[in-house]
Image (cartoon, rainbow, N blue to C red):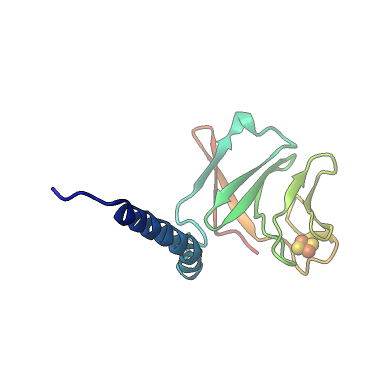
Length: 146
Ligand code: FES
């Protein structure tokens, strides 16, 4: 069995550090050009929560394919929208105190009943999604009117 000299050991360590450095530099570049595949819109309904956990006036944001969906329990029933603002694609949130959907980027406001614009720069309402309840669970799916 050959003996590793101190010089050989340092060469190996140097190569390991060089490989790690290259991976650190080129890994993100490769990841940029080959991003993970995420469905634009899921083919199957996505579980939101249970009916009991979403009382009237509350909302839940869930991952919905590539983008989040916002599901609101309004006095008129469940409503669901893409949470992506139609202005510059910021993620909208439910403002329970105001009773409105809010885009924090440029103060866009949307109606919870139909996702239409109340005020602010968004050029159109939020994309409508569908909800359904099965066995006490709330699901969101694509297919609503825009
Ligand atoms: S991105 Fe929503 S108001 Fe500008």
